[in-house]
Amino acid sequence: MTAEPGDQLLRAAICHTPRNPFEHDPALECFADGGLLIRDGRVADCGDYADVRGRHPRAVVRDLRGGFLLPGFIDTHVHFPQIHALGALGRQLLDWLEFVALPEEARMEDMAYACDTARRFVRALAANGTTTTLVFGSHFRAATGALFRAAERIGLRVVSGLVISDRRLRPELHRTPAEAYRDSVQLIREYHGRGRTRYAVSPRFALSTSEGMLDVCQTLMHEYPDIGLQTHINENALEVRQVRAMFPWAQDYLAVYEKFGLAGRRCVMAHNVHATDSELERMAASGVAVAHCPWSNAVLGSGLFPLRKHLLAGVRVALGTDVGAGTGFGMPKEALEAYAMQRVAPEGMLLSPAHLLYLATRAGAEALNLESETGDFAPGKSADFVYLRAPEGSPLEGVLRQADGMERSLAALFTLAGPESVVETAIGGESVRDASGA
Image (cartoon, rainbow, N blue to C red):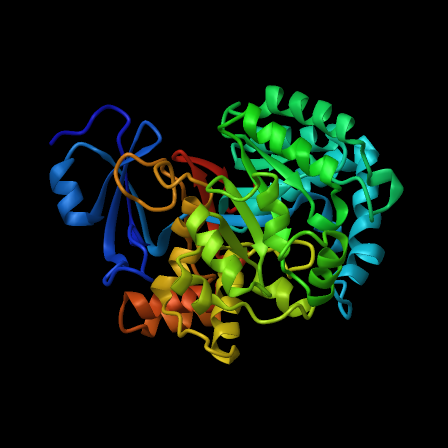
């Protein structure tokens, strides 16, 4: 094979999970001296450097030895208006919403503030190595548009939408079903499929959406069959009890969404800490994916996520940082917390470095139905990657120097690597953030 003009061969340690490690062993592929060939923004080849170089002798080599190339991280649950809500401790979900998150979300009506927040938000994602994300937008159409434009400017792959609510929140965040439909359609027509942006209908949660509003969501999903949906479910025990009281006809939380056709393969539901066995069976049958947010679950005291029960039922699971109830934008830190919580959870699972990498990358692509586009380094996929390198003199550098294999190195990256270790984030082979923070 010969190189084509513009072929670029990246040389570094490489790890990815082209298979699901919960179902396949081995699933992790690592190359201590690896080569990643990029052609026209897509992966053309991946493997041991010597082998890839032999197949493409004329490719321009970029020597990144000393660092690690991983697929770009994929965050399946995060709130754009809540970046300034980070760090509010000592509350549970409904109390935290009322006194921390919702006042901040109300500020998104100020367009100058919303635009500044959107810029900070997408830069924080890129600075942490996140290349694809499912984002709760704003309750305000203009602010949600600002998020799409900010993501477009730096090339981030964002799936987002207008947050839809008509009760139980601050009055300024409420919209009528007619207003929600009108604003959603306008955003879909303007941003869905424009560059790397996609749209997701975003009812906040059942507590804040009347049956009339849920019917609007159903209408949007029917009229636009290639958009997604995101919402919350079974996060907090009090929330679950209140949903049952507000929808007495529903056998459980999931049944509220099912009645309106909002539980299917295009749907990602966050948390699901308190799911019943019946809900898990129905989620698996319909293809609903769950965004597991371990830091948020811990900070708000929501509970320990039953990962084993989800996987045994066949429910797809990925990771979300849940900024701002979570503790930051770092997906390695989120994966590490998933590991830690499973160590102490009843019927918990021992997660390997392969599991952590999969949950932070390919699992997210699968949840968003983007597995043919991103999530690993299989040929043909978008060349989305994060390049990690330990800062000189750091504990991470010392651990990596003595690591006795690639899995040990990968475990160290998930334990110790933060944004200071992110040298470059690239989407489609193009850098969106380098060491200078550009």
